[in-house]
Amino acid sequence: PAFQYVINLPFLALGRAMKQHYFTKKGLGEAFSDGLERGKALIYVAKDQDWLVKYGYFYKKRSLPEEALLEGADEELQQVMPLYLGTKVPFSMEHLPSYVRIQGKLWSNLFRELKDGQ
Image (cartoon, rainbow, N blue to C red; front, side, top):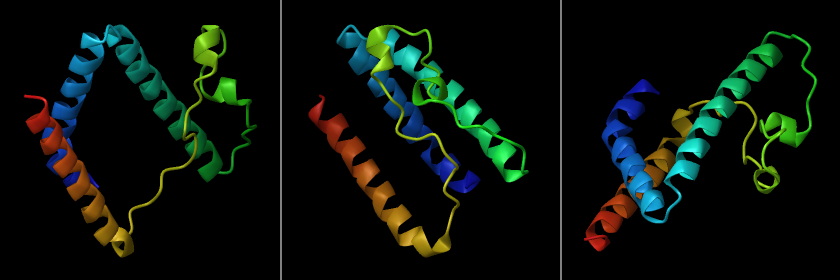
């Protein structure tokens, strides 16, 4: 939900900055940025496919490399497969305690990493 996104926005930005710094320090900053762009493209494709399925349009499942937008990519990248290419799991109040617990763990790990990194 939008409320959860707003609450998490500062932490998402901080987490992304920390990851960018980490991978750049390791010499993998460009690969990290490329991965983010590929992830955005996969989200767009998944949303499009979800819309087709939701409204009853014919959708033929493609091979995993095609689904993952890997065709024509480097052979090394062909081995990297996405974990998710399906529909979004809907929000449920029934799972709210789990959402809160997971969020708490994310925040505690973030603060622990910030503390240990200094």
